[in-house]
Image (cartoon, rainbow over all chains, first blue to last red; front, side, top):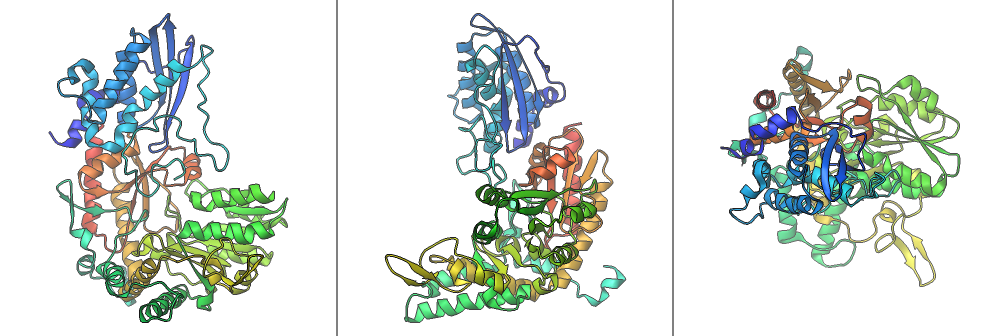
Length: 183
Length: 414
């Protein structure tokens, strides 16, 4: 299989076409917005908690196939999990897409293992992890459903257009300002 | 080539491609098809060798010493200034300031001319087609001076709304800053006409020439603009170097915007006096090797022939527009009557980033994203586009490779 077909596996293409839990959640008690200036991706993640358990999670937004499929598969993976379990899962997922997951651990990720091809495309790590960063922000947010300090730069000179996912992406950075928030 | 172009020599593209070593590279096992020239162009051997020769046998600082190498470097540096002046048909090399690129040229005008002359209530007129580098510097100086920035809207085909332009020229307008050739849409703007309207009202004009310098004939005296900025790396030269043309009378009246060596006449611990332009605007040791490389690039372009380059690129863009335009589910963004070198498009139901990833697997390098022109994206209601941008070394076969790649995109995401 070529790296491209590793990246765009059928499961990913199918979730891109028909994303699961793709809806506004009116009775959510937490939500956050995520933004990736590279793709122009924007999404919102809603969460409803039952005690410490994620009883429901949904998302809406526009993005590339990797980011949309990742959000879709994420909602399936974290529903019914505790906050701690979800955050642990994100850690392993992040290791998977950055190619740092210890050998033999990918089966612990279940369906999310289809994103292993992302590690061959460092620039797409942000796409794959945008929804997870946004979920994390929602889980850390207040119960009133406010996004946690995720406002985007409206003022000249601010560079906080990239709200989440700052720690991802290739260390050498994208070329020609293609991906920079001020590109 | 059309009959009307018969007076223009035809390019031997295959031979010219041999001047660019990188064009023989393979990417992901496929021959490189480089269609990202609006982002940066590739470098001919003549430029690579000029930079290498400078560092290998000619390197010295300029304006600093009486020794042999320093004098030679100083002469070579001044020679490139003369070449840039000829390339733009400026009246004098004293009107050419070396900069880091188009962005720095525009910031120089904003921070020197703008900051020292604009006051509350003044207006700077830009357009909705500008690259961020011709938006943000004006927003910065507006915030510093109390001036406001206004913008000429774009029509559905990607042309400037010239009726609105006339209305937006007011008694408060101090500067028109407009892109010559749009990097996001490929539109050639009627800058000469716009400049004449602005000048009738005593309004200064700045032309963003980042895309036009490599693709269109440029004559700053015929345009009658006050400032024209371009970048070396988009015209087959090195990164980190560009030039700003400024009308002599304006440059002479403008204060420095950066202080340091080489831009002064006398310095005491209490105060300093400034050198005349262009030195006044070139503080510190400049990128000398890059200037030498820029000189080699302009010499190369002139040897190839700007009319022949323009004619071939026009033919190539027409071919690409036809081939890509006839594909199902593909929408071209930017259908102005006058266009050059840029083909922006979206594939229905597929994010441009995914389009770019599939094309990359075919060895085809295009740009995907907002092209540092987010207002243009908002205007056309897309988060991003895919953009193929051509140079004279591109071929019809490369356009065919682009089309094959788009067909593969359609089959993967069907």
